[in-house]
Image (cartoon, rainbow, N blue to C red):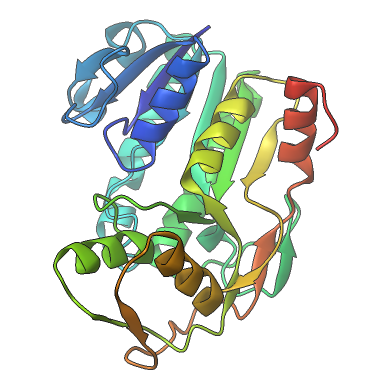
Length: 280
C-alpha cells in the first residue's frame, strides 16, 4: 500500500512517516522542506496547493494522510480561514484523481468548550479560528468522500507530549527553555485536565488508523483519560531531568479551554486490538 503524507516535514508528520516506514509501508512524503523527513521515504518537495494534478504528481497513492496545516498552535491566526479553500481544493483534486482513502488530521479544538469524554457524536461548537476551520474542513471532506464512495477518516488529535525542541507545544517550549539555561518557566495555574498522549504512541495510533479501512469516520487519537495539566508538565520535567521550575499563575487560562476534556478511545482500541490480535 502506497501512503501519501502531506506536511511530512512537520513536528507530527515526520514521526508518522518514520512509523509507517518502520512497518514497511511505501511512503510518499511531501512538504516545502525535507530536513526532518526520513530519507527512506519517496520525497516530493513542493507546494501541494499549486499542483494542477496532485494525484499524478505525487505518485498516485492509495491513501492520502493530510497532515499539512499552517499556524496550528496560533489558534487566532487568519491563515486558518484563508487557507481553508486551498485544503478543500487539494483534497477534491486528489479524490477526482483517483484516491480511494482520505484521512485528515483533526483536533479536539473542533469541539469547543466541552466537559467530559468526546466521541464521534459529540456536538461541535468551535471557539477559535483554528477550530472553526478544522471543523469546516471535516464536514466538507466527509460530504465529498460520501458522494464519491471514498473511505473517510478524521483523526482527531488531543494533547501530544514530545521532548524535542522543534515543536510549538508547551512541552517543546520547556525543552527550548531548559536548553537555553532558564531556571523558570512561565505557566498558568495548570488546573485544567486534558487527554495527553506520548509522541511515539500518537505516531503509532495514526499509522494504525490509516492502515485499515474497517473503522472509519472520526477516530480519536488519544489515551482515553484526563490528567491535570500541572501534573503532566511536572512529570515531564522530572522524566527529562530538567533543572527548571514552573512559575504558576504567570499566564491566565485561555477562556475557550475546557476544564476537563478527554477522548473516547474505543475506536482506536478496536483498531489496535485487531492489528496486534491481543486484548489491550
